[in-house]
Image 1: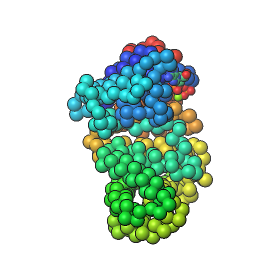
Image 2: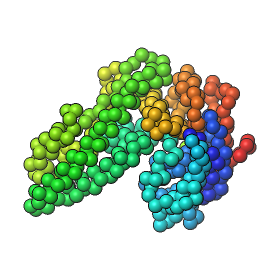
Image 3: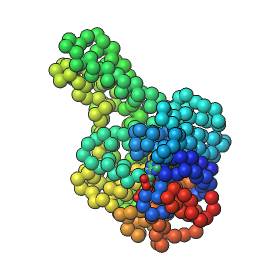
Image 4: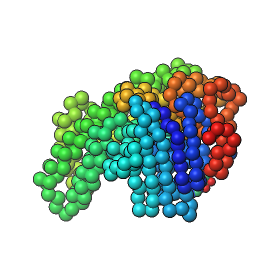
Length: 360
Ligand SMILES: Nc1ncnc2c1ncn2[C@@H]1O[C@H](COP(=O)(O)OP(=O)(O)OP(=O)(O)O)[C@@H](O)[C@H]1O
Ligand SMILES: [Mg+2]
């Protein structure tokens, strides 16, 4: 799919921007703090309804303004117009100029895969960022997963509240457990399938990108070991119940799972260099593309924020060869390195939230 006619009004540092993106490679260049990441952020908002940088949507409204208005045309099997208006009281979403109330209707029309240096947080100790990444990517192609996850989270909240009571009602605990088992089954099956398919690809991409023959594997650290989810989950809840009652919280489950990246058998968190971590993250993002393409039937738009820093010249070149194989890509940087300058890309120069020179 392709993003056309991006139109921003009062979004971040953009008062007014009308940008026609090319179907291939688009380079957004500019000095620091001019609005390059903001531009990618606007595309992510039109894809997922919200930003990847802030939880409070109001931060997206240009200082001193009352609302931000973002829109674009998405060209896939047919052309769809998306619009999001963010105001102090919330946001309104439009598909083909009709207001929609469910965000789930909006999400999935524009599919994007974003590389952001902030994602390197997945290589810190805490598993939360890794789970978030997993959920974010699977949600893009599976509304069933999104539903199961939301329902599980609300059940977990109820269960933990119940466990904090002086004498928790055990029959209510049974009800919550059986619903949580049901949602966990959906989530585990989707996580298994997703990681299986990413693992089928990531290795090759990483080897090309890193010019090495290292073995990169993502291991799913699932809360159950058996293939048969329902009975294994039942046993897990049963085994943990007394301990949960004692500690007054749900100790095990899909909300505690993790994924482990290993490079030649070594945990990446403790063993890999900064450049290697960047390449692993990139390889993972590049592996998402065919996964989404197969699952959703459309190739997503690739958004790469500040991706070339910390990569040497040879690896920068290889990356551009890898992404140059069809599909729309928007990439930011303070400049375009001489080593990668080639025909067939569009440069979009940004200065203080405005386009300078070039075609608009
Ligand atoms: N709500 C807002 N209203 C006005 N300006 C904003 C708003 N939010 C952010 N900005 C401005 O946007 C600028 C940062 O833009 P952005 O993060 O896109 O920079 P960048 O070009 O990606 O820079 P770098 O190369 O350092 O990553 C800052 O100057 C910031 O003050
Ligand atoms: Mg930036």
